[in-house]
Image (cartoon, rainbow, N blue to C red; front, side, top):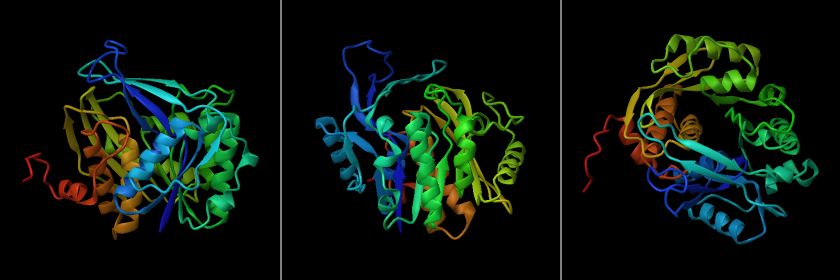
Length: 341
């Protein structure tokens, strides 16, 4: 089975440790982006993961491609074109000080790409599953059209389509609100992934849940999933992550999955001393795709995704650098963190 993800990968510049921006004269430089993060997770699990994007034809683009290849991601379909690489700056919070992300990605190569520049049938050759997020359609009008063309073609070719709704308020700047785009795109989605804010802000579905609450009512999430599935009858299932934010470095973490027949809720993890939560949702998406393809039941698939994402909170960088055995060990209850010799 081959999975292709599509979106923007950026240069990630992080203030060291828990420093504020430019508190010292250093920044840690890596790469990251929602869809690339999913591809890396899947490659780490031994799956045939392809990543499609547009990168500038310069040394930064070369380095980015090389980094993806190092993790085993297939990069042969990546296009090179004029433009720049997007950047995001990260300041890691602690205790009551939240983390902060600043985007510098306007005019990037992928945002400038036009729909006629891509032959989706060619891109999807040999692919069984397509993954996208709500971030890509937020980049520009042309990126939104590319995203819509992609899901339409994927469904016409018989691919399974997954989408992490991923609402980013700081990106929708080109004249359209998220629901204007995402409601149409979601009509072609088989597996949706979201948190409660994504559902409300991307699809315009008002729900009685408190995003900032430290304690989440699971039954309200069953009703939320039911509502989404009723609005999108072709959707097979929706997974909703449940994050209880006690502070910047202490979260409760769980997830639920609703396929219209059963409602599964995962084990809840208390994650204290969070190292880096950026990419946590992407690691969940990658874990869910793997789980749905390798386990016989939805509950086990959900547990794999939740455990994989739990582990990501202890890893610096966008990419989740864990393998199947790491995740399954935590699923089995071994979360002591004892030294392995």
